[in-house]
Length: 231
Image (tube, rainbow, N blue to C red; front, top):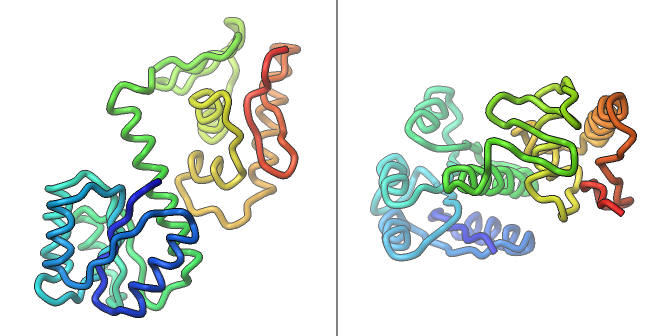
């Protein structure tokens, strides 16, 4: 279960975010000042931090670089400051995302999910868990050059098509929802883009069908997609 640190001095907003994240099955630690947040960062390990800017004890601008120095985790800034300069400044200083108050709580939870999944993927790659070559039966992906082949016959894929296959090959026994696939292949927040995913899956199947009779992608109705198991 991913652990999230919420640093927000407004009790109502802090509790609202914590309740929503816990319902989404995240573990939350709540801090109500900059100094309290710094204490938690120095003591416990987290997967993501939510950071307000206007904090007692130590403001968010001061706390952000210390979070990054202590732990290599994504930081989502939430603030009433809505100027472009504020947003650009915080993103340049190391924040991964910026939400302006008031915000939609479902969008907030979705943005948290995007950053958690994105950083989890980076961690696997940096630790050597992801090879430059992924293979499944006769399908081979070269992740460094974004090239694919089946039985030695090249398959031309778009970036999103390649990323979809890459995700499936990284976890050959897992079923991925359309949201999982969209978050990974597009690096954007999923807003119900069912048609987009269906079209890309269909295109991948057609391209693979042109070079092999084998089927590689299986639809799990009502859930999503996975690699088709070999009989």
